[in-house]
Image (cartoon, rainbow, N blue to C red):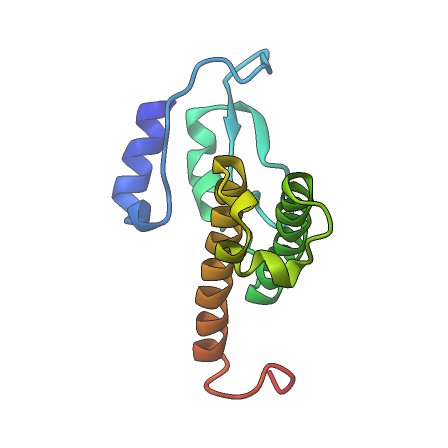
Amino acid sequence: MYDALKDAVLRTGATAHTWITKTHCLGICPKRGVTVARYPAPPDGSPILTEVEAADVPALLASPPAAGPTLAAVRRELDALEALQKEKVLALARRLRPGLTFEDVQNPHDFPELDDPDWHYGDGLLAGIASVKSMVAALSAREDGGRGEEEA
């Protein structure tokens, strides 16, 4: 089955967006054929297909994968992730020095108690999230053609 999938992907030129990987047990033992995990799932189906045989390969490759998340959805997830990480950074800072505000922790050099590896790690994660948000904003602006988000 692996060889049939690999050959079909090479023949159809789908190598730019299709990756075939041989695995061991996926935990589903079909009576015939094999189990295939597909990501992303096709729009009208499950990501897990069972009883797949070589004759099914053309149909399997013919149905396109679902579209990925929109940049707006990614932005919402990043906003939620950033809010969660801000809470974690502030909670750790307040354990090190009670009473700190989020504005305080944006200037950690003013508070020697924040010279802590765990706090620096959490703050570094927050900085990384901010970097990714900047990149997504730049992609959104490029896709919007310079229009404001509310116009897009």
